Image 1 (cartoon, one colour):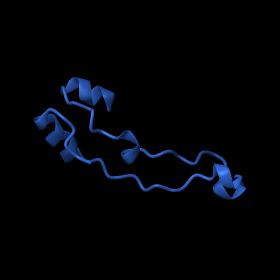
Image 2: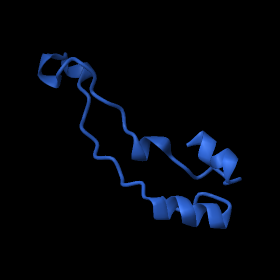
Image 3: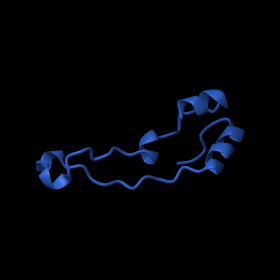
Image 4: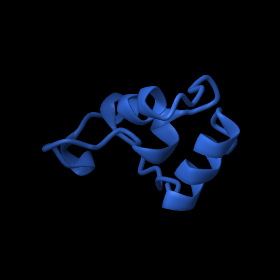
Amino acid sequence: MNDFFKRFNVGSRQFEFLLYWPYEKGLLPNFLRPLSQKVPYISPKLLTTRMLVESAKAGRWIFK
């Protein structure tokens, strides 16, 4: 995404990376982890080509 922001001169201040690529659980499944280390499943938001094009036209990230 950094390449997109630089190449198309789009402001990235409003872009929240973890909304579209949340943390992964890793190799150890949740049922084997201690309670303090369990990772909740977070469904990622869709990132579409239309979002990239509209933001490039606006010159800043316009989606939440």
